[in-house]
Image (cartoon, rainbow over all chains, first blue to last red; front, side):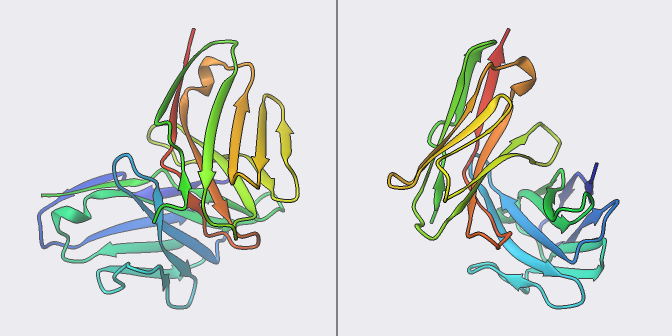
Length: 117
Length: 112
């Protein structure tokens, strides 16, 4: 079946460093991907919509300069958390919209756990 | 502002019995609702959905009920099986838009 992968699955970094998270659609092309964030015991919150070949659309309250999104190809979107701080520690999950089975469906990646020390 | 709420963080049920998961929403613009199932270290997978033009949708052991006037939906799993043990997320959207508003999830444990 359709698979969306994320890399890395977890990362620990020092405060002030930047971290890049990749989201790949493995067997289908995705013109649109979404990035979500989940804090412990809270819901997944949509951060931004990643569109291939154009700028990402950010949800209200999400700093576009802090969370850089690049959707350089139809199978890859990257989220870079710049100058990460402990409050950025969270679970980041992406989803991709595709038609691998003929019907447009949203598929989610397994998530990336980020811990900023 | 949380527009989709799952007020029960966990649910424990005996194998063979019914699991009922509840979800409430506040945004009256939502007209499409989904349930996702998530195992540890995996992404959420789509389970079942319902459009606001319906009040019930059934797929095998899974049935979703929608009460628009109460802005409430529920997921029934019957009979519950050990493999159903997972986190279940309720999500809502405006139809035609893939942007989803999620609840916080309910962890279901099915006891043998």
